[in-house]
Length: 261
Ligand code: CAA
Image (cartoon, rainbow, N blue to C red):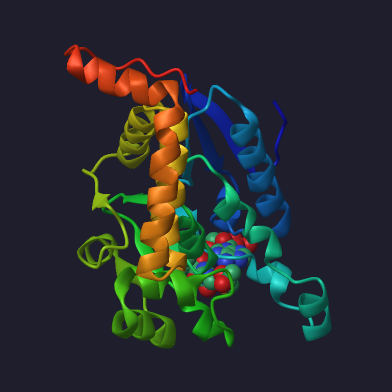
């Protein structure tokens, strides 16, 4: 297990990895060193055969208040362009295991984008989302203009990105950005996310990975191609023991015990 400076990692359930952003004084501003640590923790969870799902969270006050403005303030065009600044934000989208974002407090700018790069977002009633980059003379650079538009539609995304106004957990739920808003209470959103992650981790790993790949392709592919990919992922599952076990258990009226092969 690695040691980290800006995140905490733990395994609160036997098959679930919890990554907690931990830069409280900066409201979890997502500096490059912090993003590199997230990537490393994701690699560790991905390579750990015992882990079936990942939960990413922040603090009660802030999931993350955005990319680190102090780090970006004096950057020049040549530097950000030639180094492809923010390219280390793409690792999270390549993770094959499901990632649930448990959001309390501020999820602004890069914080909102980081949550949207996860597979599922659960929100505390205190969650505040937004893409305030326009107030800084820039635009979202880690997927905000794309993923927000996919999630909530053009008119709302335009309003949020162009005015820079924040939006509430309630709005995020009504617009379909988050799966649901959990009950009040400290730690509730993380508790719910861990419960959901445990449920997912109890399914067969191969079918979970295939399901994630198939749903994600709905973002990338035209319908016909997406349906083709779905079928191509569906058929080989009949070559797995988990399919035999899952359907066998149903026929025998017992709970399936998946062995991930
Ligand atoms: N980067 C760096 N530091 C940040 C930060 C950020 N994004 N957000 C907050 N902080 C720091 C503050 O500078 C402050 O540090 P000091 O104590 O050293 O001054 C500390 O966190 C606490 O913040 P505040 O005193 O501002 O706390 P508040 O409760 O008054 O306000 C807030 C909270 C409304 C979230 C406010 O901090 C804020 O507006 N933050 C910036 C939000 C933002 O613009 N995010 C977008 C960043 S750009 C981006 O993300 C680009 C991209 O697409 C990847």
